[in-house]
Amino acid sequence: MNKSSIYYLVLLLGLPFYIGCSENTPTLDTTSQKKLAPEITKEIEQNGCIKSFTISEDSCGKGSFYSHYGKDTKTKEVKENNNSIIHHKLPSVQGEIIEIDENGEDLNFLQYSDKIVVLEVFGKECMFCTKQGRILNMLKNSSKDKIQLIGLQVEGRMNPKETKKIFKKHGIRHPVIEGEDAEKLQDYLQFKKDWDGILPFILIIDKEGKVRNVHHGLTSLKELKKDVLDAQKVSTPAE
Image (cartoon, rainbow, N blue to C red; front, side, top):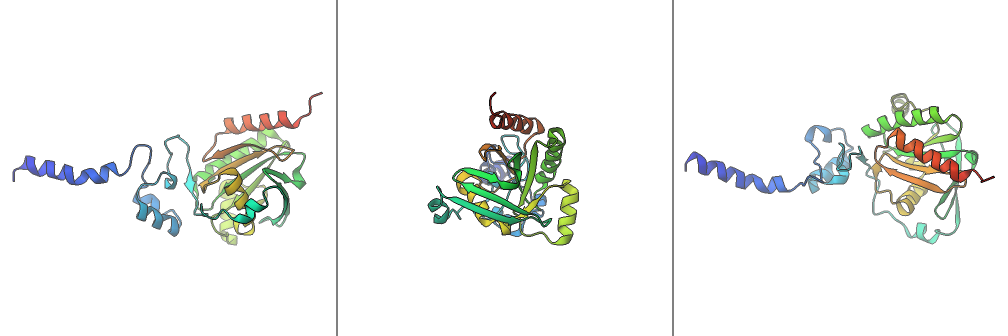
């Protein structure tokens, strides 16, 4: 067999591996897999290239990270309670109790009824969440006392050492709820707001409890400022 034949044979053998991932389905390199939770890495190895599992910018140009919180845990209980008020009483890491009334599609944060609430779902393993945290701090600083940031950390409970490290890294000065303490709230996000595990995941909630905007993946300061401004206009009665 001559060199030319060997070359074409190698190309043919490699073709199936090349076409397994399209441009719209980015791959995850092996060095990045080490940063993921074990259950996430395992599923990537089993399924090959999956867009949802990328920890780089996706085809939309938005950085995102996939949380293993189940796509298939949509419960009948959530459906049955779709039109009733569900009261959530959730402890924050800092010790504050966050009270939320879930009324259909609405989320009313009782302590913060006079503010626009920006709820960020993030994870301790999510590198894009670090950048998002800094953006949210800039949003808070630019909006003064008009908004309230709330965090929901869903990548397993943080130990004290992790909490200190992550709070410092993200610049967190607002209440953070552990996902393990808020499973029903996660059900709400998944079933009613189409959260599929992508992190960060952000909701902009007006003073009436209406969810005005939802963002999957890393979101710019410009977008968030516009969302907050729109929510303020809706929340301000016309004179």
